[in-house]
Image (cartoon, rainbow over all chains, first blue to last red; front, side, top):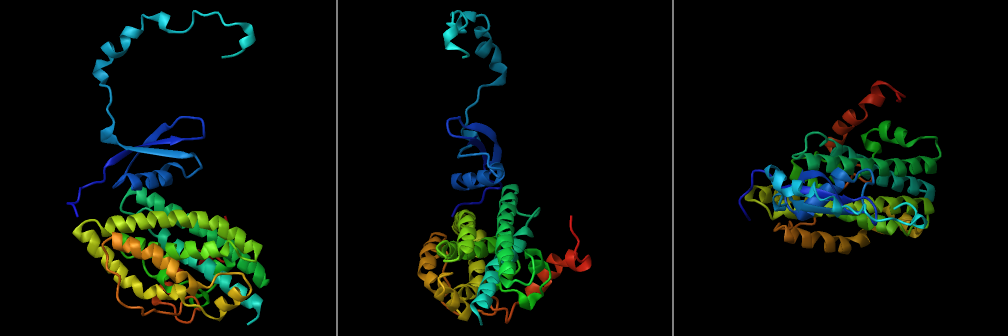
Length: 97
Length: 253
């Protein structure tokens, strides 16, 4: 037995809508542990047949980039157009890509 | 009792178990201890209502007196109901609700698995659909009972009290009577008494994991599934559940 926490931890929920697609973040919920988080995710986020697979992760386990670092993080790539694959001639036979 | 009478009676038991428990669970809607539990309980109640519609719909068909599932649900009085006593008891606290759910879900998954092999295809089809729902209900109630039993001092005490209070209502699930015998004879349904070892196999390890003590008594209240002696709680529940149809007969939307 452990001392009671005042509230269940927060979990982020990721659901894969169909085979072949990747999991998408759909929202968050509270649950006592991972097993209960998956059951809660099933009830909260897949009531209308939205998913074939559920991932949950405790919100505090997610490391996120800091918003105030967005200059150094992202702006340097703005001026590097050569990183975009737009300099190739694609043969007509290939069709839409 | 003809086989048709026995089948009608048996279908009422299946339908009334789902209806009465479904209504009880629906009473949590909007007041459950957490948003997630609220949604989960509402889902469970809706599953049970869906099952009610199928079982009572078939019961009305078998009876052949032109009664619909709605007629059977809303226009019978307490003594006509055939649900287990366990299921009509008031919800109590969240722990008692989940304990009741667990004790019943374990029984229901076994009964439905037996009904999937019914010689009556209509029953086998309903059972196959209901079993998927019941299997999920069982997983959820089992995990919750274990978490709360093996939880804090207070949650454990509440779960033990829930188990002690409900244990005398367990025996009725397995008490076979003439209706059950007729169903077994016809290959329509499994013998409830024969489900007990498998039920013990599901329930006892979970209660152990939940650090709860199983009461040392096999006393069993009777009178729900045969309608002879319902608890006082059923009538009170029906006044709420049936109010609209009683006050405005035939109302639809």
